[in-house]
Image (cartoon, rainbow, N blue to C red; front, top):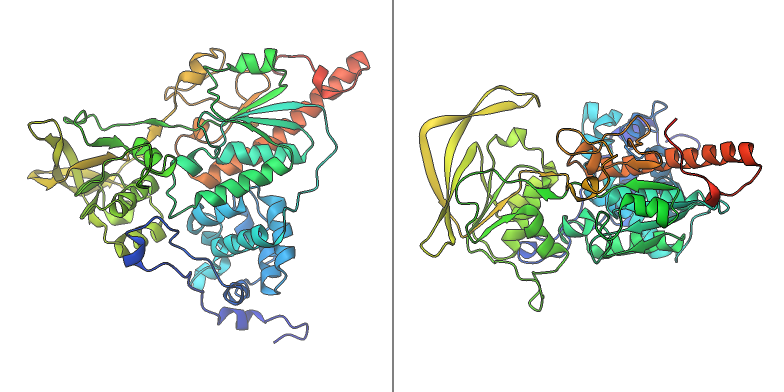
Length: 494
């Protein structure tokens, strides 16, 4: 050991990656309690000691929200959990969320130097540990805020992009109001991600932390109906708007039988269960409890859907995916957990028709076997049908989890917002739209993606919006001699 008490690199390399304690598969496949249980303090410290404290901090470059990973990990290794929390919360408005659902294995951890000779540092596990420690021990600690600027900023949508931007802008001294269409804030964090992967209490606490620094949240407000973007800027006095309403319009395959009873989009299915708590016996929102369920897709949403169906009693709960396991975009950990819980994987299989009975209810899914051909535009092998390989999977519920697209309600009521051929908002390098003072980020710009990428958009755009507002104020002062954010006129793009 080195003289200063720190481990030498060779000693750190000998420490094996620590495992995340998890709820027993047989128990969790019948309930909605969280699967991963979190690292105990000593295990977290041991894992943190694996960090080599590299001078070339590649892990940070891989993080969409640019967390100072080595700084908080080093503090965990030393047992300075308060210091680690200070670093993490300064960089990340939603650490309890990203520590649970961010695909670290494809972001920061894949760039960890230790990954070249074994397992990377478990950055995601440590992030969750620090976030949970802070939630329990910091007793409502409020971040340091800049002096009030007088600017009013509207955020459309309270998902990961919107909440992140709200936190960043509030810390910079702006008056922030978030408008959410649903009756609870959180966006996809509450309607899309199941309780067993992201407990809603975690989301609630993160939202309360934002409220503690002055963020206002108004629910049951549909921008495009309750207010338009022009209403917010001309009537309600907001000098800038950040659109982060996601891409929640379901996509269907267009195969026969999709109008049968028992067919859900993943959005509807997961919203009923996650946000409306349809899994509870006294829920006001019903959901079909399949005896045999099939979920179509290979991403994280499909994995959430099939694991939810399993918990609602489906036996089997089958995942149908047209490519092989190697091409699945879902997180490796989620696939592993699903297998442990008894989910059946039907790979290289293409659904071609949903079959119904004489009463119009789903009775099965007709499929065709596939084989992998040449790579497509995504770089993955293209699935090619095998002639004469049709077969049926008996089921009474089918959930389609093949993607989403932008809801046109907002853009149709704001015609000067430019959209692309898929209906997503077009933005410049600063995430500003074609409308002056209106910015956008998250899925409404990039299409369905991960929580952490949306958070990254929110953080970057908040910095851009802050700069935009202050530059406008400076120009206005120079022209009139007046100060204050509220008096900034609406001007065109420059």
